[in-house]
Image (cartoon, rainbow, N blue to C red):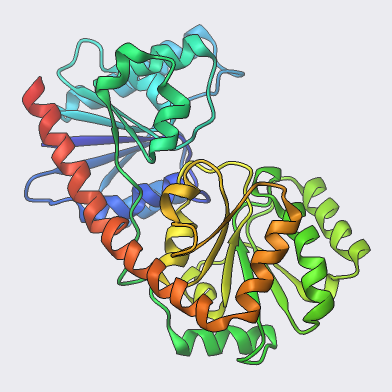
Length: 373
């Protein structure tokens, strides 16, 4: 069975691309022949080729830059790939990929699977068209399904929920890595280290976390917060750094750019915090759970499906600074409680959010789509 994956982005800096790269090597190659199509040369195509997969590049302009001539050219190129390899299922990773694929599968035998990772709604008619054109839709959480598609009742029957999966063998706490990262950061083993990992964008809630951190730092001067992630908007990054300076907690906050050794970073942490305004279903949250970290996350969308409040972590309302401060202080004052929640988080990740479970469910869906053709 031949599967063509069409990606929204050429580079790998967010959960959707990472999830795709985690799935590809776990497909049963005796049953499935995957190919990858990217909107440009970049890290995604490079990594796919290193897996001995065929990776094509077709320019897929955004809505702001598209014109009719370019649209027809892109659709023609994608359709020729579908026909050349006799593709059975086109699996799209995002709205732009779904739009181009919806036009390209016409006059072919391929079925269309739309993977939806964001709860952000597009324009109603556009979202309806994308959903209508798909044979099946996969949402990464129940909340994404509800927020994105509840307004299209007649299309509900084609929507499945398959949670993101992480490699729970790879992501597990490693004491040697903990020691190495802490030495690199100049921290003692008994120093409390909190962490937030994600793009430096407003939706991730960094200012909210900094405000909640200040009262905790006043009672725990050795506490450190590691802020890890790629800067998308330099003005925003400068603004939040200035905020930290003005609050007088600069020495307690460590800003790092993106790093590839996420397991090592998570092993070094004592508490993982995800203060986002909105999440589809955060990969790094699952990775932190797999590393046995106690979680503090906002009680929004997918977070509440991943974390059981009071069992595997603590959920707080977005922008409720007092509750976030209390939660951080609670884990610091009760390390045994934090450790137990971290162990519970690890078990939950193994049972519900493993990459093997995810890959098995995706492959089962491919077969269902093939039989329904």
